[in-house]
Amino acid sequence: MGNTSKKKVLLERRKRRVRKHVTGKPDRPRLRVHRTLKHIYAQIIDDVTGNTLVAASSVALKISGGDIGAAKAVGKALGEKAKEKSIERVCFDRGGCLYHGRVKALAEAAREAGLQF
Picture 1 (cartoon, rainbow, N blue to C red):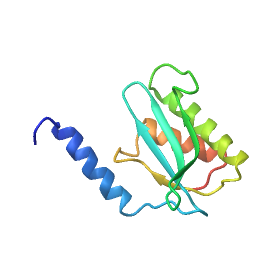
Picture 2 (cartoon, rainbow, N blue to C red):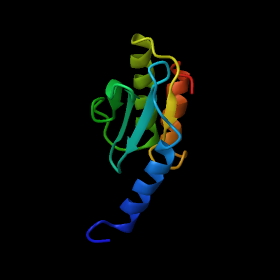
Picture 3 (cartoon, one colour):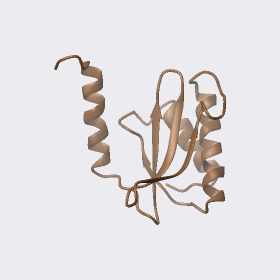
């Protein structure tokens, strides 16, 4: 295994498993969530062209702490930016993380802001 920890190897394995089934298309791009201990990041990606259409993060919003409140703010900001670019439907890519806690809060806030997935 080398220098890579077992946790990282298992996370990469889960990411690949999710990505086998979730693909972003021009009519329905992929909403990708990445979380760290301190921050949470989300972006809407068109996998055909490889372009990031919309992005939001707790860093960009200058929110300290990686808690559920920050995740809700990021989800709301992402939903509003997506509406400005007339994106309504997305596929949700949780990135190997459980649909629980901060990931779930971000998804629910994005739904409340108008995204459908």
